[in-house]
Length: 299
Image (cartoon, rainbow, N blue to C red; front, side):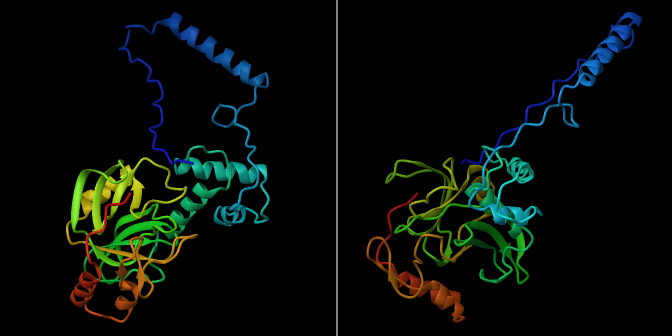
């Protein structure tokens, strides 16, 4: 299900007129009659909500993340969809501009639940290093991204959902740095646009996409909604830190100890090196020796 960004339609604005131009006694009487007639129609029993419009029926069945959404929304947790559950989940979907907003507790609703839960303190477990420099944190396990700075992890870019590499094309973990930026990049390997591309490790980049973030995975890049990618582009600069950690569900870690990438090249386990407190300049030299050649771009 694709998350879409749509501007709600504007209510039709009534034409304003000056005093004495249109509104005489005859018009006033007509307005009163019309209002009374409308009230009579409602009184006759037309189903209407408090807002004056009929509330759409909610009929979605039980979803795979039913219990999680019920607990998050303060509903009775029984793992079975009720009409009240359906309406509450549908309202949650509408609030996050998920399409369709049908009340089903599926992957898109669950993923946005993770965003909400992480908003206040995304680095609560301290897995993204707390340093004075600005750091883009990519949490593969929860498929989230945020930017923090300082010892107290002050947020300078709020938590957003992302899509990272799929099985056998995983986004490589560890400490990286933005080394090249291209606002209008187009992948020659996959023939797809990569707007707001900020490359941080070989061919892997942070970039925007119009594809569904809640299905499958990328070819290794960190995909964001275009709107989020544009804001991140405005914030980051060359040499900014990118720290990737965790394991995306259904994939394998690409930086736990010595391992190989999709091209059979050895990679150093950056997570382990950082955990041992190695200096970042020493780490960068080691990582430089690990890469034998630039990797082809991914998407």
